[in-house]
Length: 162
Image 1 (cartoon, rainbow, N blue to C red):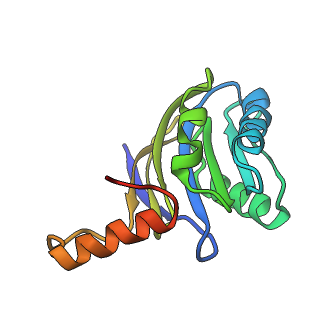
Image 2 (image 1 turned 180 degrees about the vertical axis):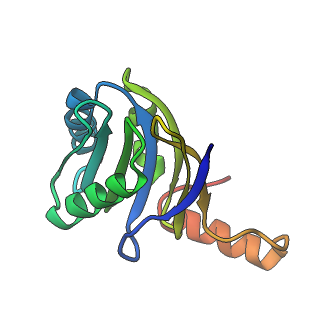
């Protein structure tokens, strides 16, 4: 039997989330924290990672509120070796490559500031992440005016398109 559950990620407005999976939790949680600190000056974050043995959640960070929320979300997900990063003062685009390139990281399920849900499957052995829901579904194509506004916003935050 497999039971499916949807877990809503709890986070304050404006906080980015990254959900991924790796291994060697006892080492990886601190190593990813060091990677975040050295990649984006001024980043504030909490990171938590579930360890399959001894079945506990490791956590660290430099923002106590985000640390607690990352740990709370990781426990709710409950899947072994899954990590949750909650961060401010940085965007996922700033840190995803450094996280993905860590030797203990197997995959990234999603990264966003949007409302975020994790779809879980549970068997007699444990829990697994099936996927994520990142915000609401798109239901129309942008207009030329919306395209212009998007490009202006991207340039405003430091990314020039052409």
